[in-house]
Image (cartoon, rainbow, N blue to C red; front, side, top):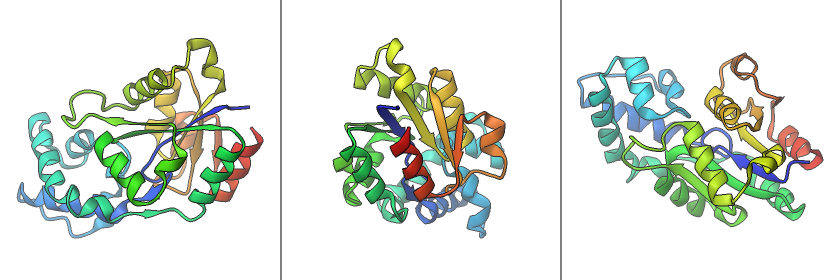
Length: 219
C-alpha cells in the first residue's frame, strides 16, 4: 500500500488551460508573435515554462526567462484563477485522507501560485505538504528537483520510498518519479499525448478520475 501520494497540479487536480494558454499568448505577443489558437499552446501545461518557450517558439534561454516575466504579468493577476477543479477531485482527496493516506503536491508551477490556487478552490485542506518551483525559474524547476524537495519536507527516508507514489498527467511527472526512485501513476484525463505515459515508463496508468480514486484506495 502506498502511504504517501504526491500529486501534480495542472491537468491532475485542476484544468488550467484557459489561464495558462492566454498568459502564454500575452507573453508571445510581447515578442511580436501572434498565436490565436490556444489549442496549440496546451503543450505548455505541465513542463517548466522556460523549456516550452525555447522548444516550441525558438526563444533563446535569456529570452525564455523574459517570456516568463511577461507571462506572469497576466497570470499573477488574471490567469491564476482562470482554472477549475476537475470533477471528482475533492471527493477523491477526501476519501484518500479518510483512509489515512498522506497527501502532498509536487508541481513545477511556482510554489506561491500553487498555494494560492489550492486555497482559492478549497483543496489546501487535504495536503500535508505543498512543494513547487521557485519564483526565479532558475532553481528547483525540474520535476526531480521539486519531488526531492517534497520528500525532504515530508521527512521520508530512502527506505520509505517504496511507500511513495507520484501521480501526474505528463511524462515529466513519470520521469521525475523515476529519477527519485519512486513509482508513478500516469493519468490520461489531463494533457498527455496518446502514448506519452507508456513511453515514459509509468508504472500504472488510469484514464479517469474515478479510476484513479479506485486505484489509490486499493493500493
